Length: 151
Image (tube, rainbow, N blue to C red; front, side, top):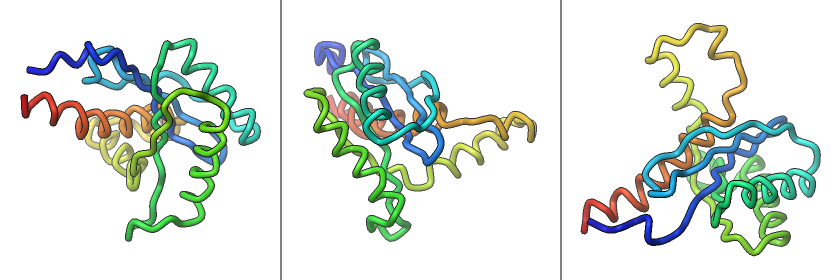
């Protein structure tokens, strides 16, 4: 079994929306993601600076941004907007900034909420941080859980 903790990495997951930005954190073992908080959109540069500040406060080494590619995998208008945000992040920090396909993550979260029996009132609350955790968990499962199983 791989000693994942030895990598010393910690991720801040980002779900970038038009109104809000959801943030999530990985644990030190890179096995679990948890919702952290939601910040309100101000401007691309201000948003990027706040995300970077939070990454530093939380001692993150990496920022992972979910990109909503079209159903056929192409870069549509929403993905272009998020990728411009990613470029802003990269221009303002030395932290590693990566992207992950988040296509369908919001719908997957809504379906999960229904399966868990959440009321309509609960489902209407902003869930950007929980969607960010879902995106980050998917990334961790695909990159670190798979690696752990192969060792």
